[in-house]
Image 1 (cartoon, rainbow, N blue to C red):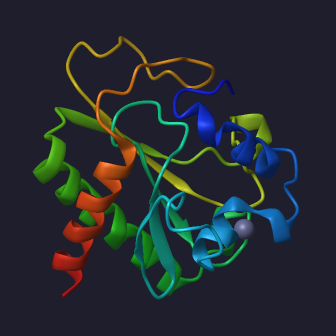
Image 2 (cartoon, rainbow, N blue to C red):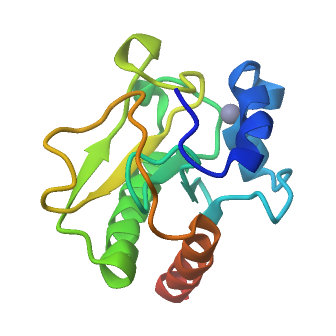
Length: 167
Ligand SMILES: [Zn+2]
């Protein structure tokens, strides 16, 4: 996928994409807090799953909800993981409704490389805010869009929203 934004991050992320092994998995690194604060996109860390902004957003506010465990199959999610992912997706919608007021959302997962998963080895669920007229279709791959709001600023605001909703 082409770089969409923040070119100063590009090289860093490219290095993850070319090394999908577990020790280099960007989701595992985010989970473990091994990404420097300034580059971390994590908004919330739960017991079984966490929330982060996508560095390659399809649209402003594009979030991902990720199980803590490095597993690729949807069928391998246990009940606790499935419940927390569901809960976090709902909280994410509430937070984004509050912060950037989308008109709608696309929500879902690309299971496997053949389905378009960028990092197929670690399951993750996308939540993409949509606005009437932003585009006529879900830009699945390679679409370059101009992002209107600063990603770091949004991460900070989302972190606060999750903190409030989990208090
Ligand atoms: Zn992983």
